[in-house]
Length: 139
Image 1 (tube, rainbow, N blue to C red):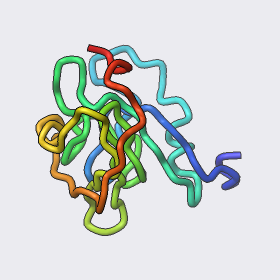
Image 2: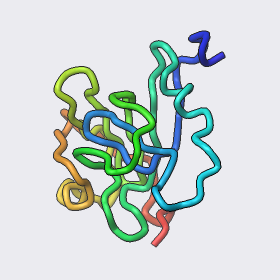
Image 3: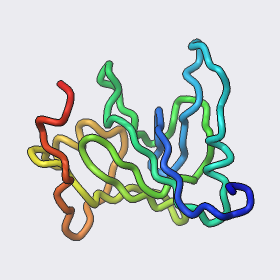
């Protein structure tokens, strides 16, 4: 299915994503790893859109959306969209890279996002409200 090009959308979890659409989702050095699984196959499907979901920041408060990933990469320039608990970014992986904010959670400001994001981003023409309630977010 995947290698034959029959899948046009894949949704994956991620550990880190760069502003250019690089994805790190398979190992944290020093931690036990059972293997990389099928993520590399999924992101290399011909003409497939890749959506990555992740918490906007790590439990320790560090950024997960960065200028460059610090963890080993699963793929370079493969991510089309990033969905977090705070917002949704579209990724320009073809040109010079960069993120565009397209949705934002209620109660979250652009300034909040800038402080919680490890790279710069553009703001779309009119970012839509993300359909998530603050009460749904973990403290």
